[in-house]
Length: 520
Ligand code: SRM
Ligand code: SF4
Image 1: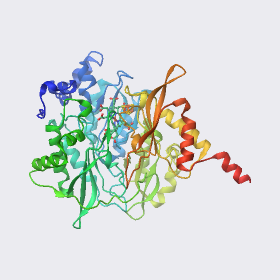
Image 2: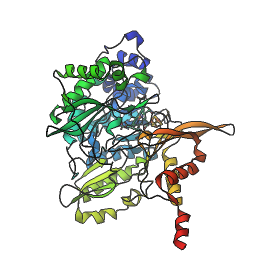
Image 3: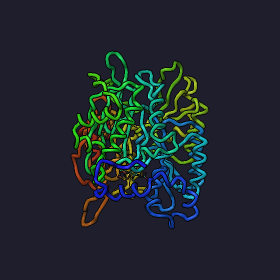
Image 4: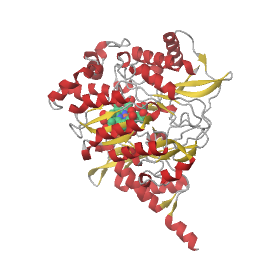
């Protein structure tokens, strides 16, 4: 196990002690024992924390029904993998479901402890892994969801993202070199012109840039959200050739592992170390770890487009082929949806599926002649290729249905709210509304046009569910984090507030006004 060397061990917080006592990956060999004991009797620290090193999350809201978070590099999976994941949740009946996450990944729900060994055997046979997807590990590595098929892409990131994951996880087996980081760590590798991965909110991000005519990446570091602080990533001042991306990821992570701050969990993300040291010292430490100096950054990067959402029908770079982006309301999937998506990918495409950070799904490689039949599939009634302007940009974190940190229910409320608003308003362009159930910001309200962060408010002597409202988030070319503009709006009073914001800031007009002007 990698020992923290940066600070005095006495100053370690309780999670550091937990990791020092027993590495999270050690529970891998104990699944049979846990199954025999049952979730009520097994060691609580193993159950509530260490299982997260295998991607298995105890849910206090649904005790005994665990959540299983995968790793899907670049958000890509095969129809066979999607079918297998559907089968895993199908056996849990109504308790089984899945969510597409804001890191273009999947989480399965309803999982029983006694099934884990079998599930992991099936994952291994299917080339899937959930290893090190929670707690103080590197999260799913994001890349453009249309890598390799985007006519305008600069670098196809699929191989790179996969190589970085394989390095970090020891090909999905688990890698003790990176199983004791000071905190979670997010990596994104953008190969497109529109920053479809939200590079600026990752601890380490690579964005395409030409240096002396060679295409590689400028490097950003330190982006993160937390309840205490949110920070956009800053340029490391370095340019990296694609062949060096894996080595740079490894070097940055080793510096973070060895020197990251571990005393206060609220101040452990990479940016706090960069603040503590200054960027120059941090960069020098990365160079020392790498064994050679980094090249200076390219003068400009190639993120020159506004962000696309990939919904709808799009011609690919391969002539005659299209990718179809389907909108999955708040990312929620049932087993039958997963079977249908797998079948549709095989019947109309090449048997591949892709996920986006907006919690939607893409079916790539659909020949021109197969587009119309695909759009007639019953599932496309629900997972539309042409959703309304508010539904289209809707994102929501898990919220109180399954997450014990949540201060509010998010997913059903988010859907209900946009349905009502779409019935009342005509909005000229899509508006990205992101809901997040608490200040941890998993639903990324700071990157939204309108961000809604769960909180509590007092209303007529009662404590009620409420939101803080964020505006000004910009994505793509001039990415900017939104800020809180209105605090503590009770959810029951939210609709008129959102209606007003949509009218005043996004050009929405009441349906009646349009009808009246038409009658005039
Ligand atoms: Fe998150 C913790 C769900 C993306 C910041 N996040 C959690 C936990 C594990 C808390 C828990 O144990 O219940 C949530 C699990 C709930 C559940 O049952 O689903 C949870 N986070 C999610 C997901 C599923 C939200 C979603 O509906 O899409 C996303 C899973 C991504 C993945 O596939 O790995 C998810 N979380 C994010 C993001 C967005 C991103 O990565 O772009 C963030 C903000 C960006 C960041 O991390 O810098 C985020 N999650 C957090 C934090 C605050 C981290 C911090 O430094 O303080 C926590 C709490 C923590 O780690 O202590 C947290
Ligand atoms: Fe849970 Fe809060 Fe993250 Fe939503 S933002 S999934 S409520 S931790």
